[in-house]
Each structure stands twice: as structure tokens, then as C-alpha cells.
Length: 181
Image (cartoon, rainbow, N blue to C red; front, side, top):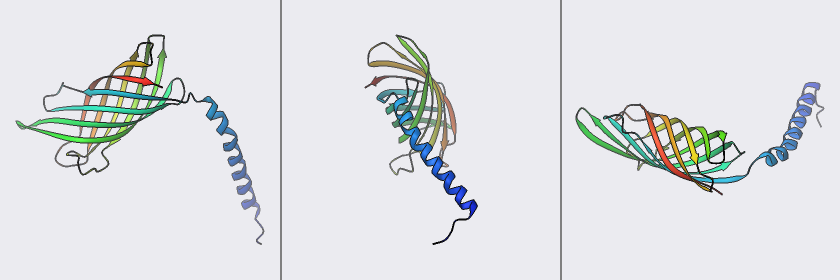
């Protein structure tokens, strides 16, 4: 059996301490979580530009990490309307994304917050336009019951992965409803 050098011994002791610290922090993190699930259905789009009009039907399934912080997994059925050089065209895509949001203001009837998101169609063959998106959105949830209407306003950047369509950045509005379980 090989004898450990002093440096190897310190590395192994440090590794043991980090593992022990991690194991001790798991219960603290588990009890600090709110631990409820959330569902959100919304439609978002823009009509400001005549050359590019994207519309998405979104379904989010998420987890409320704390009262203010949440993470969502998103599926979108998207259609983009294009008008370039007088020629009208459209592209249909299925997108999977991830959102991270934070509620900055709570009241009895209103929550106001912001979220960031990323999504991609992950090179699906049934998508007409292959792209990734990055978005930032401010939103408000209204009401006191478990089902709350949501209104949002945001900015989304479409990073095209094809030569057929160029990169775009748009301001969008969204409307939908969310359910906290």
C-alpha cells in the first residue's frame, strides 16, 4: 500500500470536509424551499414590426423554490410571420426552454416580478426555423385564488441558426393564467 504524501493528505482532508459540509447543507436547503409546483399557460407575441411578427403559445411547468424564486420548464408552439422584400412567409417551430423568475413585490391581490429565459428547438427536424431565444420579461399576477391571470411585457432576442432568416430582437406582450398547486 502506497503512503500518501502530505499534499495528497491535505487534498483528501479538504475533499472530506467539503463533502461533509455539502451533506450538512442539504437539509437546510430542503427546509428553506417552499416546495410547491406551478403551471402557466400564456400567449405572447408582437405586432409592432411589419417585417416580423412572432406568436407563441406557451405552457410552463415549474417549481416554486421559495416564496419569491421559481424555475420553469417551458414548451412553446411558435409561429413567425415574415415579410421580406414584399414576399410573405411563415415558419412553425416547437421550442423547449427554461425560465428563472423572481417576484419582487407581494400583496394580497397582486404580485409583480421579472423573469429571464432561454429556449431552443434543439435541431428538431419538424421545425421550419431553427433558433435559440433569450428573453427578459416583467410580469404581474392578479387575484387571490390559486388560478391567477398574468400580464407581461418583455424583450426577446431570436438567435437564428439558419441562413434563411436573420437574428431579430422584439418587444412582446403576453397574457395568460397560472395555477399554483
